[in-house]
Length: 262
Image (cartoon, rainbow, N blue to C red; front, side, top):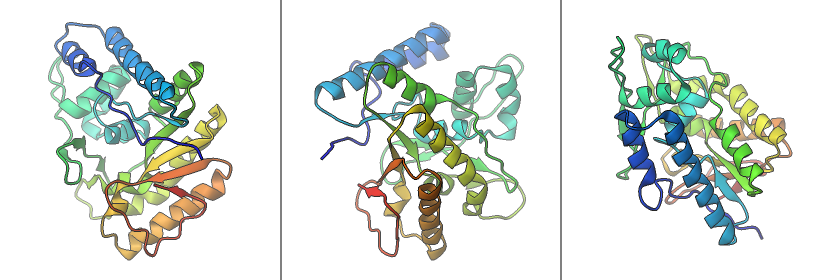
């Protein structure tokens, strides 16, 4: 039996990430220094887990802000008001602008909404969807961190927010009425592309977090959840999937093909 954990604290033992982010936002350190601090925290976390005997070590559980925002950047779900920044700024500055807003250098861009993560005191940045929403591989964080872990001989297990939960965690925007869960047909091919790319990099296990499995789901969402994982199994047959949820969860009326559930 292999052991693993779902994720690891990312702030650093002395709150190094918080201090570095605040220093970067105030212009006291460079982006390079911030990135180096983040890399140091990640690598210490991986090595601590490896020394403790963890056999599948989570990668991409680290975040500068939150994992839902990470997924938005990975999928290119960038609100229209932030798109000029996407062309003018680094991906990390765009990321922070989406979370915090950006009011300098002639820009006056408001932040995305923040809300509670279910019934905890943690928060996440709410994805914004429009009716004709498109998805594409935009960010590279999960691939970069998996490659970083492999280079250190870490037995890495990439972690991703599940496609269904990602849509349900967001909000519909714009004047047209639509149900964001119906965007799954556009999202799933890109999501599968991510999994295929991870498999090509050498990943054998991937953890997919579907926290909405703890909620009372409609029959429509239940059917979508089952069909999504059937398609993932079909398109990435050799990749081993750990399907993770939090708190108490029931899989009643859900048939998930060859998925390891925790």
